[in-house]
Image (tube, rainbow, N blue to C red; front, side, top):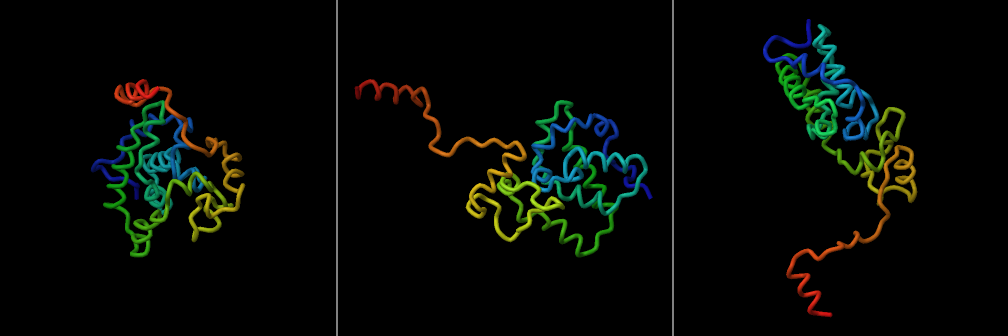
Length: 186
């Protein structure tokens, strides 16, 4: 049985706009966290393309589409202008209409990312061999990691953080009134 029916399937033209350049990868929180190609927009588009080519709607396809947070950071990063929002919206409608979920899978689809936060994606990308941080019980922020571990992961993955300290001072006063007050106090 084909993955998609004729009632608003994902557009073949929109899927074909993806040139698989990978610019979306560092912007996708689920890819940054787990490091698995199928948890990236590019990987999901590939799974959707398989479905458009007559492949079945597998549990794997459904799982990876369900994991998309819908943040659409990939849309603004894409130099080809792929309209991922339209692709994933139509795919999700097809999944809800055509994929039989067990009660356990339905609950997992809703709660799979409930503990996800962007700080986890930045502080500890792909910690384990399967891409899932080894200790999911504690937040992955710097306060919960040994000193240097977050820096190790950041350096390994090319994430550059500014040095800690106060924010840089503005070169101009925030308003005319502040400028006038600064002159009069001299």
